[in-house]
Image (cartoon, rainbow over all chains, first blue to last red):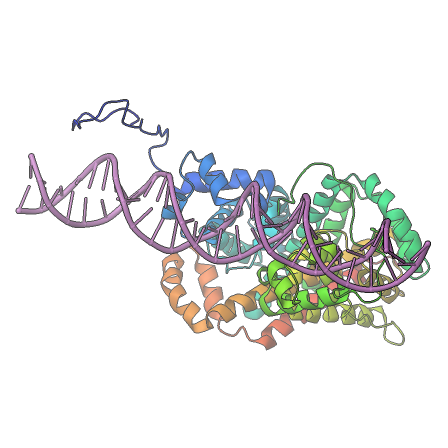
Length: 241
Length: 241
DNA sequence: AGGGCTCCTCGTACAGTGTTCGAGTTGACT
DNA sequence: AGTCAACTCGAACACTGTACGAGGAGCCCT
């Protein structure tokens, strides 16, 4: 493809004619575009994806992407649905609905951990991509056995999703500030401020002293499981019988 | 932008940085700046706030703001803490801890409804502004009577906050797309797509037909209360006794 | 063989963004 | 009167998303 076309001879020499840009992939496609976008997003977050950087990563002009995708928003929709493909929902065979739903929740959480840039994207548009709908379908099936229908089912599903997104999102952004500065640095710059508010907020400072600096991954794991089992217990307690 | 730098920068926030010595009556002040920023944010969301527009709204040069605020991020921190001042936490007098915590949750939710731009801001930096800390202190007090300490208390507080932010956030962004196009328009453009996935996802389409088009404010209210009482029941069930 | 026609690429340009810099203004204190 | 700090702000830089239109490649139908 990169070689000179010989069908027509034009009165030009090889030297005056600009060499055809060598394209390893003859054309751009949605798949490759989303692939490249995902690399940028996973590596540097939402701000790391710009149309120009995407273009250069694809060895193509900056605005060529706009033929395959009308918008940056649309591109993000595609990327979001792509990573929704990583979410697994166990079928409720054997184990009750609680296990299946818990499996879904945990899978959604690890997906968010892998792709933290998804968090501000949830819900900006109704998620109706193929993978999102597949997940929804499977979640409905997972809830079989809980005896929920109509609005009750909808409420329970929303509760699970809202909790997971809220929890995983706050975990992710917390990780972010942890990466930016080591926890000790933070504690160092924070110490005088903490001392200042110590008498205004006695309970809070006591709590902080009690709890901080053991925010390891284990603790986050435990916290998520605690919240999840609370939510499941609540759904269990409120379901019609 | 370009704020996702991984370079180690000294961790600072508006609250830890010493306030600048101020003069008698400078023409610009943090209060007025945050006031104007809030007007823009509430009127047009996160994208509606740009430093230049903020400048013109303040009848000042575009870059004058940078004397009083080092960053746009810092400005957003200030704005976020300002609206955190609207959150009320009932003292647990009389009614048990459940009522107090529920009151906090509902107050946080209405705050988010009033200022939907806060959602993507939660947790990007540790929230240590005066109003945020005041709320945290009061929440700890509200949990008195639940008999939670240390990590248990922390987990319960995180659970409440994560649920409320997740739920109110998804409500807010849903409202957004509702405003963009009337629900009927949406259903109209969506109908063929729904028909297309009907046999691939039978349960989902049945559920949608069952549930949709009654997404009134009442339903959202009910859903939030359902989720909240689930969470509270879960905390109740898991607390040490 | 040539004329359209559709798919596709891409350089250029526009209007905007956050932020830096340095020159200029003001007002209070020595 | 002079100094100095507190402030304001225009200009500029390096970005951003996107519209537009000029082209090129391959195909089908005369």
